[in-house]
Length: 478
Image (cartoon, rainbow, N blue to C red; front, side):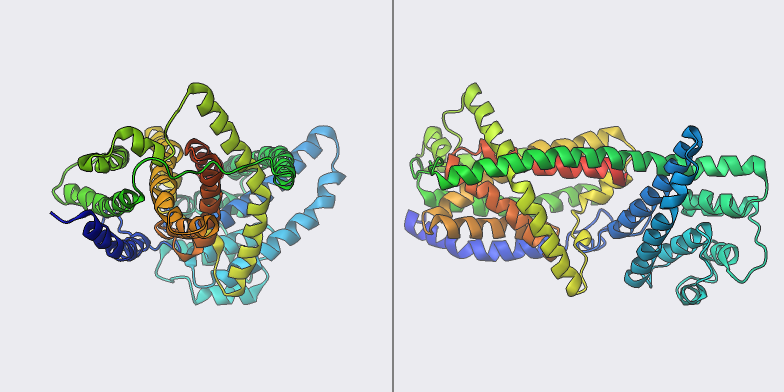
């Protein structure tokens, strides 16, 4: 058997190797059909990117706002009020089309939508864009032929047949109603087409207004929480409670290396079952396997370390009901206080990425397309359990409990926070695009670990970030 010293040296040398393999594997994750999953531009169920889906959302909300104002104007006799806003909405959409065309000029799905929207808003006469689109769209595609014919600004009159509508409805469900309403001459059908595009657009616009109200309330709470922590730091209210009691930090290194190794093996295990033709409940099995990773923290018991010492070292000791609620409250308040700096960071980061030709919206977790495309409530529940409960539990134990404890024994608090957070961000599948935002979240969680010692506050913070993301996706991208 290897001595404890030689074993420690082996794991110390193994950690960077395992980390590199984990990052490469995570950033080049495989889908169920074994095809490469592009972590910089994940695809939705319809074959276009999350970035394009966000563009859809922006256009639908803008048109929904216009339609809502028209409806309210008719209802309350304010016919002139919506008309005053119409030029602003139209100009905003034009700018959006120009940007989308520039960014996605080689994407036929985006071009189809721009042409349909241009026709609907009466400025399809921009023939330059139309002719540019001819080089992108496929003349052998039925959908492209229909879109080209019905949106041609040079055509004197265009008619949409029932077969045209059916074909477009399958590929472009919302946009087909938009185009059919614009060019259809039959009043009885027009109301049906109008209902088809108007209901979704107005619904999204109202969701946007509700979300905007929620953002304002959360923004006020965030400002109050941030002010509280700034005052507290200036008056030295907060003292670090981190300690080195409990098991030896060398065991933390071993646990983390074992965790990364098994983390790498789980996708291969799932793929093995799939290759065998087994019907694998992917999400459920993923939850079970991730929960099983918690048992790795008992690794030191094989070498005589007590469970109490393990819990003490990992920030899991002395958990009481009052203590749990107190730490959750601290985690939530810390989350609120972090939102303003976080969004400022995102704005700066977005600007920087745009300068180098990248899009921050492309740094999306591969599970997002699964959530966006699923109509099964059970799947959504399992994803929520995975994101809000399992991920914060496992990742905080392993990164802030295990990894941070080992780094903290060798580095200052500042460097331990920065390095553990960078590793935390790097092993996520969002790729380079997600590195900075995830590192920031990791820094917040590690700061709570240094301050509170207990992991519960950092778990609460982690769960808050994941919950907010999940709510936004379910509300707008599904």
